[in-house]
Image 1 (cartoon, rainbow, N blue to C red):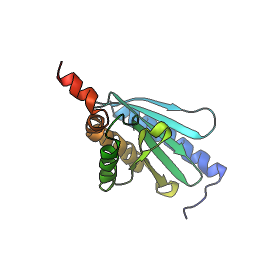
Image 2: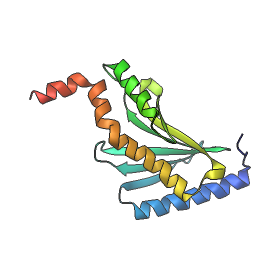
Image 3: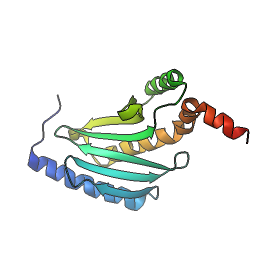
Image 4: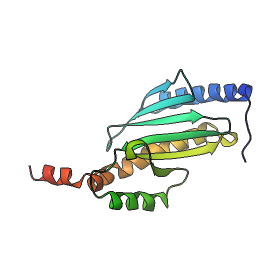
Length: 157
């Protein structure tokens, strides 16, 4: 089991994450905004400009042992759900540090977490970059599976 961090240690880590995210935003033009939640969980929102998906927002949540990171990929499929879920599971086999999952309202998410003890700026950048690049790589293909008839009707116009 990973270490349990006390309030003082979490406050230091929280400040480091603020600084690291500010640095990443200053040096990465794809990062459009970094925001913080002011209530409840210790949480950040990193909004990035995409190419395949217009925007990707990564949510970072600091717990007493881990930093969770996640992004919304797409809504629940309207059709071909079995094929889409099979594709998600096959992609999970090749992902490192993240996995596709089904969340609220059967929407597709990409999630991961890391122990706070291994957290540094490089690992934070890697986690955000993994979610961003994975969404960019697979988003359009997943939409074409889960919303095939919409794509087929558009190609006829």
